[in-house]
Length: 177
Image (cartoon, rainbow, N blue to C red; front, top):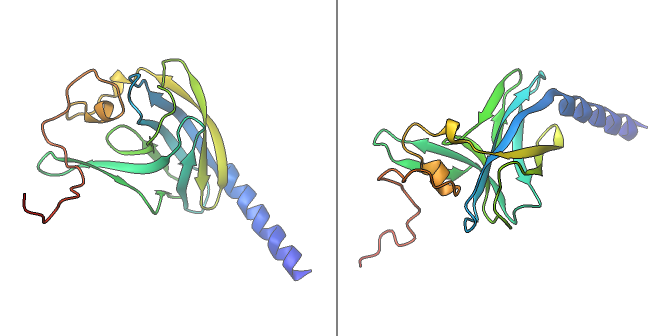
């Protein structure tokens, strides 16, 4: 009996947390035909009283999906890294996933994103569980990053050249050539 009450309580808390997470304006950039990477952007609103964490995302459009953050350091060098612990969504706040910032990253697109298409994206939250949204592919040139267009370049939208500096992982660090 105690186990049933505890399980039922956990289920009710999970349902309440699910209802507290709202996804607004899910969108992706158009990608070039040969590009295998893309991104998804949106606002994640937590109307609840409990913090949550976006811990994973998936779509049938890509074999591999990660949560990323892009930052620009004081020298203007752009760095993108996987958020292995997820993206925090504090209670009572909205977290914006946008170009050159937090975003969902598709590492192996099966086909390019074409303007006007829609596709399902399942977001997995630590407390709220899974929530599937419909993402719309758009011309996002009005959301062009401040420092050039590196994010668009990395995601296949080739409307401007990348900025001069980009730090990529160096697999030969410490080796003499």
